[in-house]
Length: 88
Image 1: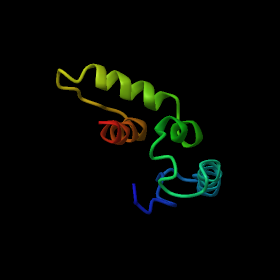
Image 2: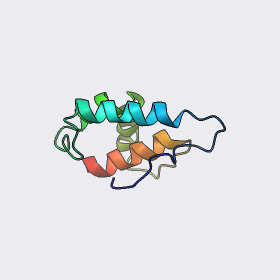
Image 3: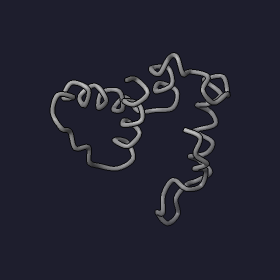
Image 4: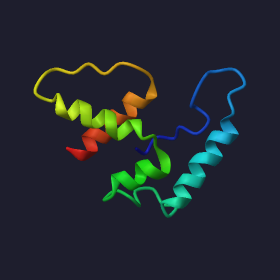
C-alpha cells in the first residue's frame, strides 16, 4: 500500500515488533521479495502474508454488495477492505 508502517503495528506494551518485522520480511521473500510482485495473484499474496479470514471476509462483503455493509473490528477488516478495492 506504500505506507511505511514498520514499528507502528500496535501500542501494546512489550509488543514483539522485531518478530513481526521478521515475519513480514520472510513473507515478502516468499513472494519474490519485491513490493507488488503478486499483484496479479492476490490469493498467493494472502497465502504468504495474510490470514485465511481475509479472502473469506472479502467474499462475504462482496456477496452482500447490494446492501450497505458496515465492517467493524480491528486491522483484519481494514486489510480486507483494501483487498476488496483491489479485486473490484
